[in-house]
Length: 313
Length: 154
Image (tube, rainbow over the protein chains, first blue to last red):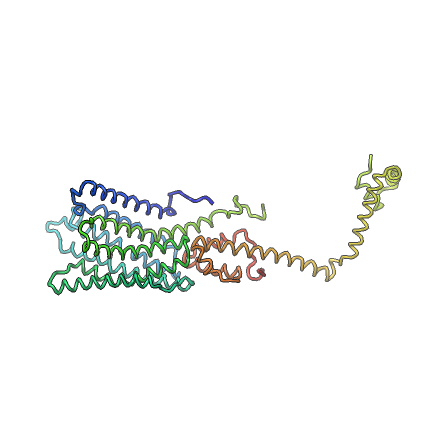
């Protein structure tokens, strides 16, 4: 059977996402190379993060749209309906957070809250914090619930696998990281240093990340029992998205502690777009599987190329 | 010019007229080839008559049972082939949508084709959505003379 290489329609959504991510990462790495080649005469830390914010919000919107298309195919009462509902809510939280943070939560010219004679800085700050909560702890909690639902269904169909030492070790590392972050925050608080609201919001999401990391490892084991099919790829993308989120959180904390030379802004620009793209692959692969099934039903079977029943032929 | 086979058969069965019979008899007295042909026709006729006498009458109970068992045997063969084809199609679908290891999880040893169809339908229904799962089911069953539980014997 000839492999379809067309880039038309939703069937090629995963390819488009991967191509976009590839181009984005390539451009960023090229900039980093130029920066190194130029002898680091200008600061990449100081560059604007608008392109990454736009890419991130755009990818979140694509993710939400794809999730809504998938959700429509699961009617009320379908076992995976609740899982897809939660994944869609998580995508909506991410998209809303992106729009609110970048459009209403930033002091820029196109923000309508800045147009009045007295800019409402307090309101802008509140919107930004609400957006961070929606895109942080709330989204992670929704994802944890979605993961729990899908793990239950996988268990029901015999795809359950017990966590191994590696799974516990990964979760243990994430727990240790969480404890370190909380310890650092407590120490700073006791020393009388102010902890920003952004930091508190980030800390609130860490316990959920511990749960998510364990769930992601369990999903990885369960999916390994399935294989590499069209449906499986979506769940692999979900597991990768969560593990990348965890890795990103750890890296964002570790890099400034141990290295001052790595351009953190570049990493901050690359990581969220990569994570956003991987999450968008979840509904994209699901759609590929569904559309393939529907396309097969619409076309004549392979053993009767002209659609003439075998008996009649 | 030799006499045609159809005319010889009719001559054998005494179905030719008096004039034509005389002509054929005259030709047979002179032609060795046609005599051989007539002998062959007569021997085949005898074989058919004896076989007919040995075979039970189709109208009788034994004849009907024979015909029915022959039909059942033919249907069993068809059903076996259909069940085997159905299983291989279902395995291919599971492999496509989930992966090769999933086939071992879904297909237990000695599972019947209709059970495998049920399990595959259920799992596809859950993970793919009812419409897409139905489309896969239709695709699997298309052009397949699968009689289902009653017809399946292998």
